[in-house]
Length: 118
Image 1 (cartoon, rainbow, N blue to C red):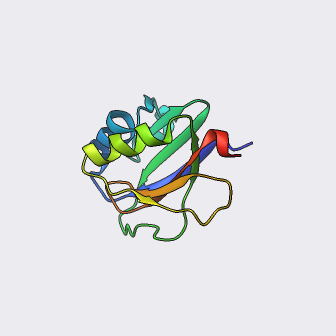
Image 2: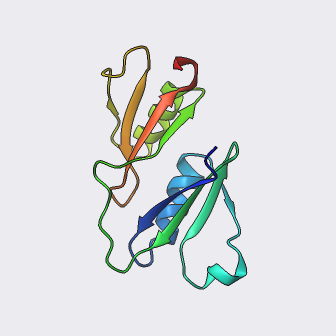
C-alpha cells in the first residue's frame, strides 16, 4: 500500500500547486507537520492517497517517471483539466485500460487511469 507520492516544484511553487491539486483535481490540502512546514511545499490527500509537493531549489520536472492515479470518471477529469488549460494525451497502449497523461503546472508527468479498467 502506498502512503504518498513526492513530487518536486520550483521555489515559490505552492500557489500553483494549490490551484492545480486542490482547485482542478479536487484533492484536499492537509497540514504538513510543524517540523517540516519550514521547508516549504504543500501536501494533498484524495481517497487515502497523499501527494507531497516539495520545493527543490534545483528543480527539474520528471518527464518519464510518474504516479498513476485510478479515477472513477476519467472523461470528466479530462474535461476539467482541459478547461483549466491542461493538455490531455490519451494512450491506448495499455490493453483493457483507458488512460491519459497530463502534466502538473511545473511539467511533472501524471497518469490517470479509469478505475473500472483494472
